[in-house]
Length: 209
Image 1 (cartoon, rainbow, N blue to C red):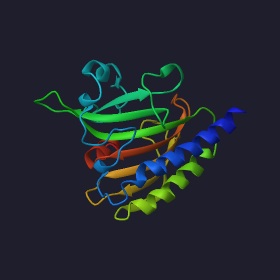
Image 2: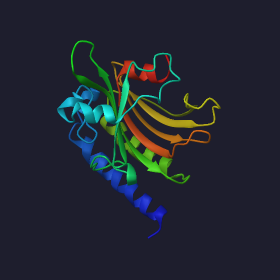
Image 3: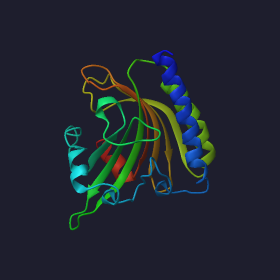
């Protein structure tokens, strides 16, 4: 079976698991009521991992383009080829944004996202994103849906790398984002489909406000 066929089948499996994953929380109206790979906004990372493991797998340089690059930290777990450091059920990688409290050892989660990686350019991402969005529209009754909307990623100063996103805004301005990330050189990232749960403050930091 060719690599492209495998990827399409994998994405269908992802969609099925994603729908089942959310179906038990159809009445919830807070992003803290949802989990990706067992992690939820509001959790303490140290309940899952050692502090050494969190620090070792925290990427600190990725947000140097922001005015306040270290307001949040991004921790990664991978189940992808040689980068594997953790066993994941549904995604190639999971990224978790945390904010270490000033007067404690807590690492509180403010955002969590699951990512499926595309090593080759494909239109599969938009198809699967739209399928997921259709299902989420049935679940997030009280959220405001915006998109799809394409914008340049602020990490690429050329403006050529884009995010094709559909957003679900909750009443407290927290955000669920389902997006296709399309990267071009000199940014050396693979295209990907990402599902993210972000607090309002974290999202505003990410967009540079």
